[in-house]
Length: 460
Image 1: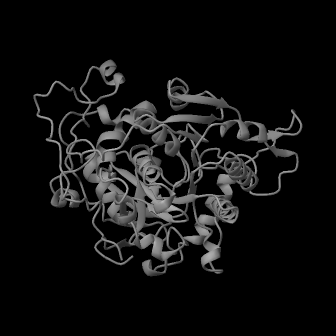
Image 2 (image 1 turned 90 degrees about the horizontal axis):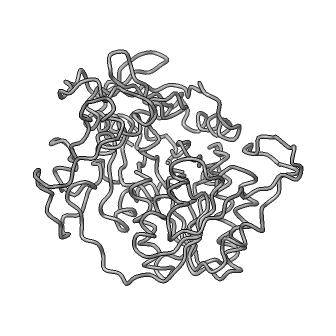
Image 3 (image 1 turned 45 degrees about the horizontal axis):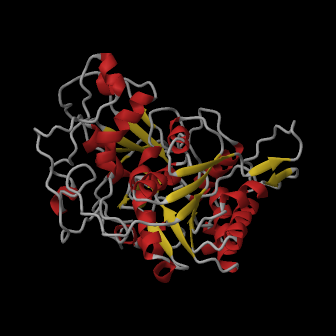
């Protein structure tokens, strides 16, 4: 089994010195903090002294950093779809920074990320859906995992996207018939002579064990992966862990980190509290990892699956890391998924299947189905990812540095309420079961779009 410690970073790398406190670089804080007339609390870029990361290395994303691997300036173009999604946007930022050109499909130009992509001088943007409605007045929800008569594939846009592209990073979504769209994209890439096709895939759990239910959105990706292999594209398949960025105090299902009256947070989900799950900071770490795949090329990675996750933590351990970062008590409550906002039908179907796959009736963490379907792939967390990129941002650092900023952008003010270091009023190991309210011990060492289910910009 993989290590239970978050992000076991290599220590045989050369490091740049940490910036001094007198450095001219100012602390990163949101503009709106100035409006409130107070300093943002979460500006210290280091892990807590008792973090497992600290014992191994000080190499986190905002302090020590491994030196870049040398590489010639690339003269290649990458085709990307769903370019405002967290995975694609992460790749576009770093790819264009090191010299790649990008041809990017955007569903629309709405939102901060879409604007960022569209105004990047090294990106040529193609705006439009990857599906077409046969009738203009057709208002159906196109996310349902079912036959969609009258919903077609936008072949013209897809073909245009690949003109002049040598590389591709493809993360299909459930808008339209994902399997038909995924197959059309693969066909277009092959016609265009794409040299390396990286597909963001996920498992069909029923393919590994007939007693496990399929998660509809992931099963579609599994079918697309099979097709890509069938037509002989030089391809690599990345399986992304649960996004750190999924957490929000907004009432979104599954990853709501709900703010309590006493200022603490509670995360409720059906996962066994002591069963391990893979975690990934998609915005920070997908881009560097995919760039390394492109640099190594299909000679090294053709046909391989990669577990792209930098931490392998149980819900209790995840809450403990989050608590250390955010400086407030964080508790995990095992319970059903609560849907309190309007969500696409396809995502609703996914959540219903997820509750069956990771059933509340299972009291044995060893019997929880592996997140990636294949236990061997789960066991390769985080080694697969660290072979590509050695400077990840862990859940603790995300909770300290990024979560408060995203919360403030969403209109929350809890991070501005006091200036002192808060005193933790409990531990993240206190787990409440919704059914019986019995507390469980968090020290048991026994055993996702990404569970990348939903984010502000995309669903996987």
